[in-house]
Length: 145
Image 1 (cartoon, rainbow, N blue to C red):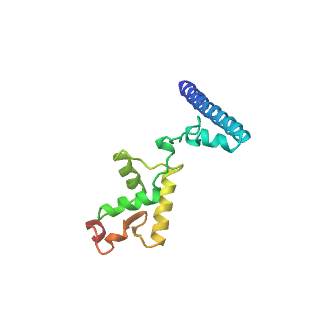
Image 2: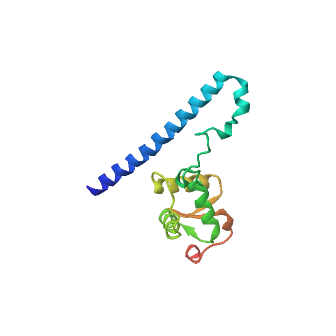
Image 3: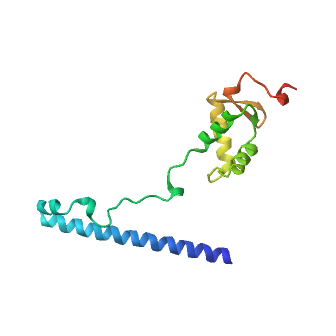
C-alpha cells in the first residue's frame, strides 16, 4: 500500500509543478497580448528576454536525449575481443552503474544485435552469442575449441 501512496504523492507533486509552469506561461501570454495591443513602441521598451515566464526551461537529466541502446551495445562490444550474449551485455551495463533504459531491455538488445548483424557490424559466433566486427579475424579460446 505504501508504494501506491508514494506514487500518488509523486504524481501530485509533478502535477503541481506542471500547473505552476502553465500559470507562468499564461502570465507571459497575457503580457505579450497586452504588448501587441500597445503597438511597436512597447517592444522597444520591454525586450522579450526580460518578460517573466519566458526563461529557458532546462529539462531534467532523465528527459534529455539519451544515447540509443544500439549505440551503447555496439560501443561496449568494440571494447573487448570476446563474444557476448544478451544477458551478459545487460549485466555489463548494470555492473558499470549505467543500465540500459528501454521498455523491454532484453528485446531492445536483441533487436540491436539483429540489426547490427544484418549490417555486418557484428557477427554471430554461436546461437545467441555475438562479437564485434572489429575483431572479425580473431577467435577466443572457446570459439577455437
